[in-house]
Length: 263
Image (tube, rainbow, N blue to C red; front, side, top):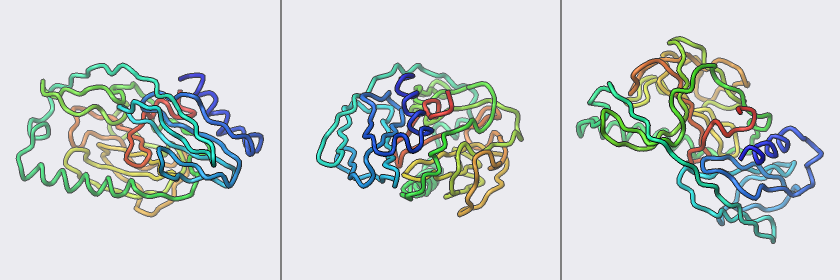
């Protein structure tokens, strides 16, 4: 994946040199973002669904944690298959979590469902903006305390795999935008994720930040890479202060560690 990631970074930062050269990696790791290039005006589909193509020929898509592949990519009249490389997913045991957040009662479960539906709806935004096209930076600097995709066991109870990356930092640490984007959701007190911000980078790519102690941005605001979104905290289902950074291609969760500029 490292070689492929290097190629993707070159695509991002190579500019006009790649503008008319069709390019698509042969493989992608589970949880990986694919950034390709075609001749401008080429129609691109991913498993039969059309995706945005920039005026420079740039397009993107992602391979989810459990994607088996191959992913079928239509490039005009041609068809290419992208092989999906499997990964090992270690088990993470998280103890000391409040029991009501692990197995909530029915009325709380209904609240969680309503709240998550709002977040899912916000992720469907499909702008032609390419705010992601200059690569990404770390939102905070700290120890990685939870990795994308690892099976989570809360208080001995197996739950869904981890949907993002956790970075342990002191409460109040400023969280910076990893790339330009438009704020499409702010929620100060979601039951599971606490203070939550959703930042749309265009082409269906979005970042989400959870467990925040403070939110400094508003829905509709356009922020620049490095601009402060709010502060780290331990709100929602959390045992200590940290930043949860999730990354999506529409509804497909991806690994922030595999983004260009991060490794």
